[in-house]
View 1 (tube, one colour):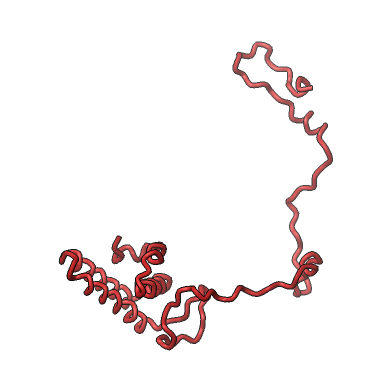
View 2 (tube, helix red, strand yellow):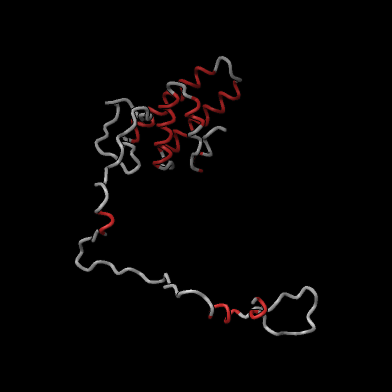
Length: 180
């Protein structure tokens, strides 16, 4: 049967020449025709979305799960004038209030480390904190970086270092002041 699909070609082919297949014969003996998957479904014309019968026959759709009780909170209650929630689930913050809430614990941690850390290292961290404050007040940091720094400070407070090590996926804008 396989001999039918090989075209008669050069009888003097080399030992490593591949066989020449006749693909036309293979498609003639194929099974039932399949419909091509290149057709698009037309959009509804009346403006109301149609729901398929298979979607309505199941249980009713449920909303998002309730928030976890062990999820880290960004700020203590009452410390932020937030009234709305942004798409990522972070409350909206005032920039000036947040910079103080972020820098104060970081500077306190630096002061706590000054007794048992080399002076050069502490001075370098102090310069990086000053650069962080300069970029923050200058508007050079993106909102996700600001929010992650606020979250980092919240996790740093109870010294949960495993949670901190999982948060090291900062954007490239944090590279100039973030220590590694």
